[in-house]
Length: 342
Image (tube, rainbow, N blue to C red):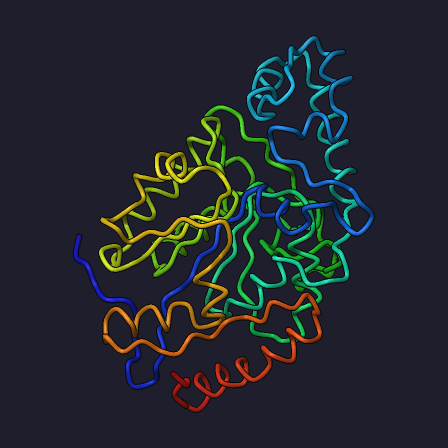
């Protein structure tokens, strides 16, 4: 495959290639480590059964379960038995009710910081069912220049009009027919995953593939890529290998697990030493809204720009005030061709 350079505009100190961030359950837990605004805890797959109180339903269905077992593996056995369809629906209902009740805290969370650190050209793709990312998006969207959201396994706050292929949040209406957007199915990963069976999910994965193929920086935050997720990991890896800037691109893994374990999981994605492993989005937050620009200028032009660290405050209004001039610079770049400061 022919390789190419990222979309660097050296005379504008800008790179139009995309930064793509992929979120797993660990990211939501990092956003609210002690629970949401009401203390409701954020589950990961290893403790979801306990936190959402699914054990009675599994017990009634005679599905064996041991504490700490990955929920996806448990659900795979349940979904394989047609006689347990009613229990399957009951579990989905309970999960939807649990996550839909979550409320993001008033303070700035890591989701607010991610949204404010990225640009309109960038993407955040989430595997999570909880509404925290959507709620963070809504309270930051007045800035207008936020990344595009992709919900890979559905989301309790995502809605769609399948007739007109429109998506948005549940409070939105279809711009074509005027009807309220309908809740999307929560996709429970089972076996090889049927990403083609639902139009909403199919379109989300098509969008992710295209974004990864064009990404200059790929950040994976709190996503463990469990064995039950082999199909999802395979789709992402195929798209990453098809990326024409792969030899120059970078991948950043945000995880609290031991570095050797993280390396073993994501080694197929690495190109030489073009990767980083950390417990927080170091590069992204240190070069807020300029991650691809600064990376391209430093590596391709040998002319590092000054760091642009996002303030550490959890005061959301203060973050908005700090971000506003950067947004103005981006609009001036797009509309008038004004170079970004470097």
